[in-house]
Length: 60
Length: 359
Image 1: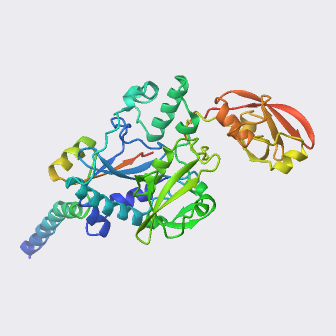
Image 2 (image 1 turned 180 degrees about the vertical axis):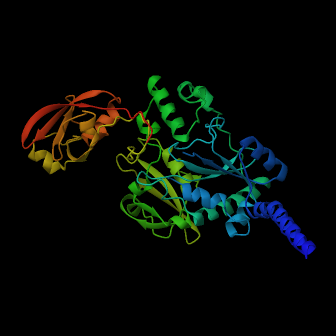
């Protein structure tokens, strides 16, 4: 009985660990990645042959 | 806050959405510190707190997205028109890579560190070089150096509505409604604006940027529209003061603060008061700002008629005393007004102010 309870706790901890690692990765994969550096954007565009979409945002 | 919602909607576009799919075909960058930005290449009206460029790694700009009008910074920000721009950007990039687009000369680089006043007030203090500060300190520097041309340097977002052009904003440059000059020139609802003075425009940002480049004394502009897949060239007369927009929303501007608003008198009203008609800027005060009393700027009242400033009663550009002061005087100057109140002529002092704080 005690072992079964321990296993449940172990699985719960494992599930939390997996969710905390994989969750953000999946979320990241669902969103557009925005560079924050112009030179890096130029380098990446040269490497990938993609055009650049650059936003200038003045944050208060 | 201007552009905040639009910014969030663009940046957080889900990859599996139509917009996300378009953005995935780009290298996306979001720059929030202007300290190291080439403000020569990315020139614009710096009172846009959000602005986009579609370009390539050769620093060739395909198009701009953004732009504003005086009454709102958000009027022309729209997700549907942005998607149209992103689609067009991909097409232009394909054409560029095939060698079908001519390479244009890159604008001369200019960095914030090259503007001494900007360095003194921001960079040297480890402060952020905010967009509007670039424009303001560029202008204050120009004023100090005797190089300020108010008409071109201050009024950087001319409004196409002064030509009577009202766009169907979600559809980009499709015209929704025409009035005044655009109607007289033959523009029609449903036209797609494609060129200004011969240069292609793809977005409202392109159109406003090029409109701002028109010399202030130009009598006409040429607008090309697509109508039923055919190009149609339209020659449009520019109204007097087409470049003028209300700048009172701006911060640290070199435009003099006068703390009143006025409306030009009609010719018959001028005659009634025996005032100069031709180019006379006699105008009636329609609103007095509460700061006038706080700052002891002036004692004008609503209904007063101002017909002279420092003895001058007419001007080829200004149609109101308010605009005359803003165009011809330096912020901080004190002037003498010729005023008619309740039928009696009098003189009074007006001290202008330079806005020197952030909202």
